Length: 237
Image (cartoon, rainbow, N blue to C red; front, top):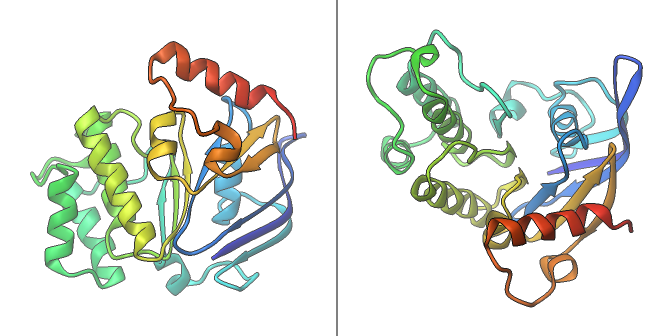
């Protein structure tokens, strides 16, 4: 679905992503981990053509910038925003559903599962958590072939976060290639097929869950998770 080879991204006078090679395959979820400032968001924006980059980048087998049809096959949750401030939540999700040919029943199920507000209040008047739910619903509706999700569950309560992860897993089972950036290890263990770790704009480690996290159960205390992440981020290939 997506293949990046020796991809680099420059912002201002600095390279924020250097020599990144990554492949996303249908039906698989790749978790993208790294400390703040490691280049995760810049990489995601470059994958979608929203930031200029150097190197080779293919989406759906083509190196051309996505046309309208290809863009319709991509679901994206940015780190911030993701919906026009002058639209209502229902208007925005319904538009994405129509563009992707989603049925009314499927759209209603996603709206209900993520508790997307259906009142007439404009997006700019929604809370941060509400806007996150709207952005995620708009990305998931209509079975997109490629999902690029930048911390999609940030700000959600535990119950809604669980629903969101189940929908993301369902999308992968339906054939979507998924790139998921998160700081939450339980989400990685719940749904990821592989892990990619970035630091200082480079991929420093990659592998399966067992290869990087081991087979022993992980303690989900905040301190234990933080230590596990430090271990992952601090080791080189």
